[in-house]
Length: 96
Image (cartoon, rainbow, N blue to C red; front, side, top):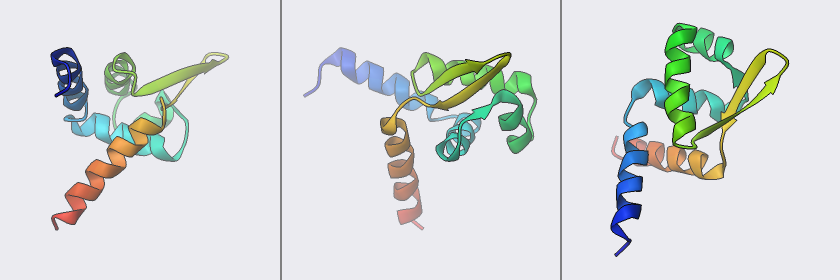
């Protein structure tokens, strides 16, 4: 059995995946590195709302960012994020 602390951290990680906006952001970032403006336009949301969700994704190390001048670009932190997303989606689609 994994350590209790590890289980709590996993629960917190999975909570982040429990928000449809954050899932849509992750889905968009699977395909390309994007700035807040691009994500907002793609999802039809405000830059403020996207920034708020990106903060939660950064805090749980699901996305990373890089600055190019005044523009900040976001991408998935590593392949684990992509794998978690793809496995979850496969599980959901398997039930249909």
